[in-house]
Picture 1 (cartoon, rainbow, N blue to C red):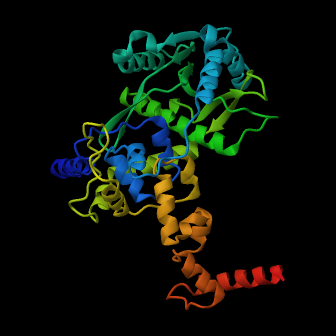
Picture 2: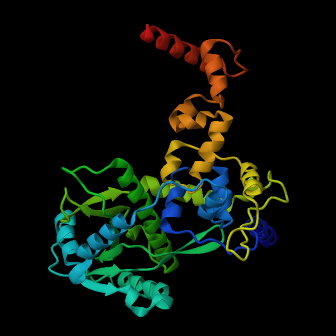
Length: 375
């Protein structure tokens, strides 16, 4: 894209957002990109920096997820336990997990320099550790990374520690969900891995900017959780290469979102400008109609990752979309996008269109087997 085209593209994103400032992307929002990379609605709104949570609440479909105050307090207590005394407990875990022979490590609390200096101080500390590479082990607490998302810089404030030993860096992700008998809930582990992958990507980007090899940031992140029903921490390595690959593709797709914009009406906006009472002046009905102009790719997984999930689920229900059945079933149905269409093909009351013959045959077979099993 040339400079003129890039300026026009960014102006169009500003028009979509209206007078509101760009909503920053936190690590959870960026990680959610990997959960549903094929959704045009999410790609456009994220590229434009639109507040999806406020949008969902204004149209009457607030997201169902979010931590309770009890969960937040428990998480903070557990994180403090892991990090107390210069991350002494974390060092114990890493000795066992990574086979470290070091007796002690350095500790740098990046937050101590003040919020306005954290980003530059993080850069300086990481650069120095990578250049000196003297085998010294160091913990960096409260680092501040940055990542460019569709022309906007997002600052990531992780509750993680970047751990460096011998010039190689690991991201440590601290979560308060429990590991029971060596097993944790797969969905929670996957969500933690996606979020940690964002930090790995940001740190690798920083390493490249500083002239160091990005691969010096390990794709294995250290996940620390409570063990069983106590607050005693346990740690495991989680490979996030798959999540990194999806994130790279999705972020690259967002930089090419101009292709998605070409098919949208020129007067389309998602304006959330507030009135004197702080509530958006635009009517909820008008905003909902604007959302419907951008195609979504709903899946049940969206209920735990996207702020617009309830709106998109309602849309899929009204349309009778096969999206409600999940990605695997939807993909197996190929070009059959409606529930009524799928049922008609299965029951033989609808003739298959060109290219639907094989899908129709499989649906009829499945329906016959279902009827026989019911008998």
